Length: 493
Image (cartoon, rainbow, N blue to C red; front, side, top):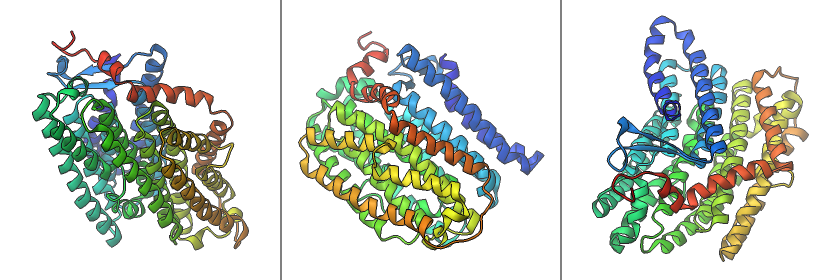
């Protein structure tokens, strides 16, 4: 069982190194190869998901057969099983989209980076070791920097540079925080850190956790460390932007939530949570106000995405089971909606030659299926009932009120009104302005309609997804269970 699960890490890593070999045979094989590998990855992830959710037990993989805390372990519990599946499925869809969307050379480098980005995000979510988390975070970040600059335009180079500078600072903060915790506990294993959290010197605990939090806030696009995000989203190739929003950022925010809850017995924990509540709420407000001013639809959706991530961070920073469950639910909903939006907008961009507002006028007449999918995703993001995001937004606002952060709930509702303004403005442009002749829509339009249908199905009947999400949420919140599942050598053994 664990051998199959370990392929989630091994397959993308080995496959990336085979790309240059394939290039020597024929360059035209590279894109189909990318589709094939992501399809196999989705199959393995689907099997792992079924296994974890039917048995109710996590799959734990030991590197080299060494038991933790000496050896490095991967921990695929309910949360990791769910999100590794989302990462694989979104990667598969974007590999199909890359067939048409990515024409800039060198295509072999693109395929390698694409696979390594999928690997990095999968590893961040599956690892049970805090230093390994840093390693996977670096793999994710470095491939993301390169993919941001891939289109070789001046804007892409500038966006990548911003990302490198802020990402480098974030990584340094994170690594210093890890070093402090390691110095205080003598372990890098997450389960053992949770057991030793209460014995850490209060100052070391607060400084270490704060550094880790700020380090991960760069990856998780939290204010004020998210200046790189809108430029990177706009400059990166269209399939890569969808991957950034659907799962790269989610990996960062998961790592933040996982480490915060593991160290909840450390002193000064609650004050750090309050700081995170403020950062998350400001992220939502500033992102939505910035989105309102944008003239380019891809950039507007990028700001909208940052706002939604702020909402997820707010849910995780409440310190309650209700908050964590709502946050995970929103992560799932947001991954579906934003994968659809960035896929659709990228498709429009490559079909009509750009993603400025003017290009979307009359889209309902020219590309009706794509326009319909964008409309469904837009209405869902705003939080209209009978669409998936309504339920997770409602649960986050209720959890925020329960936790006593009335001001945060009010600001989030204000931001939702702002969000409604710019999404409905876009929908109005597509259906009631301009005209044009019908453009033939291909396979991508079919994928868009399937994603739109999923959004509506979850909106009408959220219970099945909610049941999955509650298990994934308790995987993060119920630390005692996490510690119990990891067989530590000489520690409670």
